[in-house]
Image (cartoon, rainbow, N blue to C red):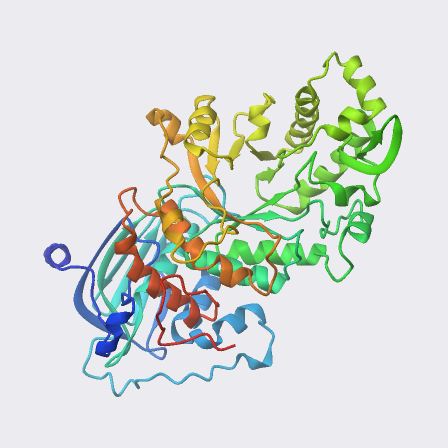
Amino acid sequence: MRSLTVLLILLAMISHSHGKRPRHSLNSFYIEPTVGQPWPKPQSIRTTFEQYALHPAAFHFLVNSTSQTCDLLTSAFDRYYKLIFYPSSYLNYILNPKSTDNEIKYKPKKSLHDLRDVTLLKRLNVHIQEPCEQYPALESDESYTLTINGDNGMLESVSIWGAIRGLETFSHIVYPDENLGLAINQTVISDFPRFQHRGLLLDTSRHFISIRTLKMNLEAMANSKMNVFHLHIVDDQSFPYESRTFPDLSGAGAYNQEHVYSQNDIADLIEFARQRGIRVVVEFDSPGHTQSWGRVIDVLTHCYNGGKPTNELGPMDPSRNSTFDFLKKLFSEIANVFPDHYVHLGGDEVNFDCWRSNPDVQAFMRQMEFGNDYSLLEQYYMQNVVNIVASTGKGYTVWQEIIDNNVTVKADTVVDVWKEPYPVELARVTKLGYRTLLSACWYLNYISYGQDWINYYKCDPHNFNGTDAQKKLVVGGEACMWGELIDATNVISTTWPRAATVAERLWSAANVTDPNAATPRLEEHRCRYLRRGIPAAPVNGPSYCDVEYNR
């Protein structure tokens, strides 16, 4: 007990800005990255200058004798061992596990003989309090504590998901060192996320994105402790989801059959995400954004002009019962394929012109006594959809228009705010008592020259006038990368590390707001991505990394 007290006093006295790498004087022109600093910034981190060496032949992850354990933990041990000691081959290993090119070719810079006179960190003991859950959820506990002191370390968490977050942090505080090869400092970290939902939306309809690239993105998300992959899988342009119930949807709705996600692809992606504590929340947006749905299934509204059909199609047709019969079957399938409790139902940007032109829809409006208020028709459609999804046992996330149009939704509904001014929208939605996400200020597809990440970093989900009870209803937020000009050639470098700044805003304490203080840590994190094989783009001007991207 006395030794622990002395350690805590030392940690409190010494700054955590350890480990400056020696650089030439010309480097005054560049951003000087930190060394061994985790991203996002933990809630509490205290380190000393006391260093310990790590060597692959002398280090092990161990499960504490009283800990819970499961396949998720043993798989994480395997991944993080390779990530820490063999980063150059790690990405190929996880993306192509059966490849013959995965042999370890990296030789440690220091031998055990070289390190005979220094203290080696030989083990990280892990203790998980509660039995492992099969899948992460909105309510999952991701807290952990991490202590490095002498030849062993201790990682403690309530859940498996906290252990995975702690292992990620552990991999960040191990850093290359001239004298020790790989080093870690005496450290105590106590950490937990500020917000439960830290998401990233990718759009795979405007441009198809390969499963391999989606997995690379999931790995990048895990590296920044993001925990929700919002998969905007279909839209007007294409329907790349292979439906079991309606296989012709992708047969006619995809760009071609090379641009389709099979059921095996989806299952593989969900499992890859699960291993990293990431939820996959799929979005099937309607009644608008559904042109690709109508290429084979007659569920869209037929548009008219001057009383005659134009051969154009509009939103889903709410005037026909067959539309909802189709949706019941489709969402029943979706509920079985995607294990997360939530499905995103969209509901945004519905154009009423086609509904106004269609004589059958006009007759239905009269029958329902809606007058000429087509927002009531949209409300009617969405009320049916949310009831259909609720009948499957799923919860749902919706874009804010659903609430704008007074649809009656379940108490656990999550409302995604994407319109400005977002402080006004957040105040209004939370005042109605709904759990809320913020996306409005984090549209990463709007690219501007220079350090545009600073704008994302300054945006905060609690930046609105509301009571403490209202602010507790904000469960997090999402960065969005829409796909009009994004595909597998540029999605990773355009998204990362810019999305990491959103990840820090959603994880770290509310007072972690200074972009000047964040810049050198972000520079290190970007270099960390490159070392791990992820082509994260430069975001701070002229710079270099000790390991550059070379693939």
